[in-house]
Length: 426
Image 1 (cartoon, rainbow, N blue to C red):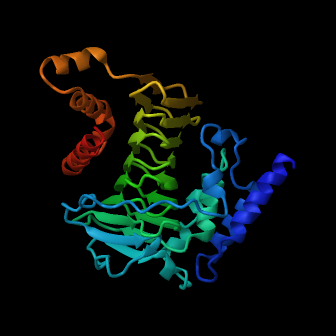
Image 2 (cartoon, rainbow, N blue to C red):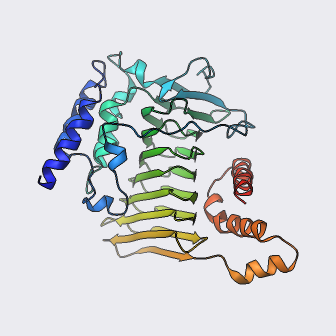
C-alpha cells in the first residue's frame, strides 16, 4: 500500500472514532478544522516534522491503556490560593471546581459556548491554530479544534487577585481526552494560569492565547507523574505591542509527550519567554517543538529547555526563530541542553535561525553531556552520598529553565517538587 494510502486510512479510522460537536457559534471553526485535517492527513512516521518522534499511538483509533497513578503526595499548587478548575478525563467537574467568579476575569466552558450563538471566543477559537498551520502543518492541533468537547474560554480584563489553576485528573485507564482553551488578555490586564495533572491515558490539548497591547500572561504547566500516559499539546500565542508572555513547562514521567509552541510577536517591544524542564526514565520520550516568529521592532524572545535523561530515555528539541524583514532590533535567544545520566539515553536537537533583518541579536546553542565528574567528586569528598550529589547537580542543571518562572513562590514550589521526585528515584 502506498504511503499516502496508509496515511489516509489512519486518518479516516481516527476520524470515524470521534464525534463532531454540532451547532453553536463554534460550528464554522470546527468544520474548517475538520477540512484541514482531512486535507493534511494525520502525521506519519515519514513526515519531516515528526522525524524524531513516532506519532502512531497519538493518532490511532484505539487508545493504549495507561494505569492510573496512585497519588502519594498532595497535588501540585495546593499551597496557593487559587481559583481551581478541574477536568476529569477531559470533562469539566463542577463539584471539584471552585466557583468561576473572579474579579478581572471571566471564565466560560467551551461545552457551554457550543450551545450559544454569540460569544467573544468565536473570534479566537481555531483562528491562531489555523494561522499556525504554515509553514509547517500541525494536524493534531486541527483535530483538536474540530473535536474538542470541553475546555475553557478565559477573558482577562483586569488583574485577578489569584492564579487560575486548571487541574487535569486521570481516573480511567482507557480515557482519551481532547481539551481546547482560548485565552484573551485585554490591554493592561495581567494574569497567571497554572496547569497540572496527567489528564488522561491519551491527552490532546490545544491552547490559543491572544495578548493585546501591554497585556501580560504567565503560564506555568506541570505534566506528570503518570508513568504510562501519552500527550500532545499545542500552544498558539499572538502578542501585541509591549505585551509579555512567559511560559514554563515541567514534565516528569510518561511514555510519550510532545509539546508544541507557536508564538508570533506582532507588536513592537513585545516579550516572549518559553521554557521547559523534564526528567525522564526508561521508555520516556519527550519532544519540545517551538516556532517563534518576530514580525515587529525591538522584540525579545527566549527559549530555554533542559532535559535530564536516564535508563534509555529520549529527549527531542526542535526550535526555530524566524525574523521577518523589518523586524529590526530583534533579540532572540535559544538554548537546549541535555544531561545524560547513562550511556543508553539520547538527546536529538534541531535548532534553527532564519533571519531577514540586519540589525538583530540572535543566538542558539545545544549541548549534551554527562554529570560533571569534578563537581561530583567535590561533593562526595565532603561526605555527600553519590545519589544525593547527583540530584544536587541535576537541580543545578535545571535551574536556568526553572528561573524563567517569574513568581518566586511558584518557582520554589516547582523546585521542592522536583527535589521530592528525584529523591524517590534514588
